Image 1: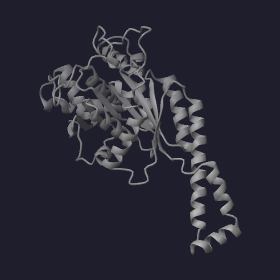
Image 2 (image 1 turned 120 degrees about the horizontal axis):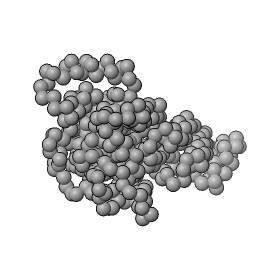
Image 3 (image 1 turned 135 degrees about the horizontal axis):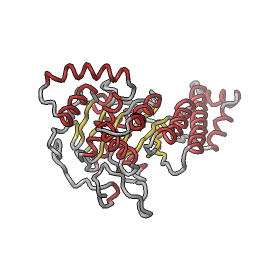
Length: 357
């Protein structure tokens, strides 16, 4: 994390953060909900926000997309923090860097990476808010916290979301990208501040959840990006999650990234040719002409057409089910290694093209 009392954080601030979209800063600081005016519009560019959660069904490339968005933002001059919630080392693999910890490490020019640690987040919270000066005193408090966190669901999530919102409120970064939990768990994390806010009506806890909610609820500051693939289950989960985000949280859905979209290798005319060539007499004649078995090639062409057509059907269903104002960004299938810095760079380039850079 950036050192406390160092508003610029690692590397110092490259520019005045201001408010997203180039709008004048509203009174009350970046954590305050901006006044709605007719000329303000939710930014179409998801990188114009300050806090971006990236989630998706397991296996769809969520971490790769989160890392790619962070890399793209850094390459465009934004001081960017990429935070991994699960701390499994996935972003270290995506960026081909070393182990990441709670303290941000610069892994690329203008790009820092960190792994969430709720105990470290608690220590930071106690130091900043309760002025607990001695590390030794944190032990009993941490044990008490474990008891409270176990007995009261949502407390641990508050420490995670609160840390991320704190980084936004303090303007330590131009953009914070979060490799958030998968679709089955992200709602609980995003909704935790509201749940606790509903339970506590006064006092410091209410104040803390108040400014956290202000940041999460502001579509100019915070957005959720869902990653899907053009397959039945990921599309089903994305549709369900989009509805739950709208009904159960105050976070806006910033974009849907559809990963691994197969290119249209063959048109309908070519498909007809392949079907004609697959007839036994013609396939036999063709095999004799090239002196080899052509059936695997014809089967492969047919499979490519089928997969592309099936994927398109799922994408049509997805597009019809979510708010048409939510942009859908398409990342092509990488016919190569799908992880590592090279793949992350390729996905970042694809997203850059989709965003019109």
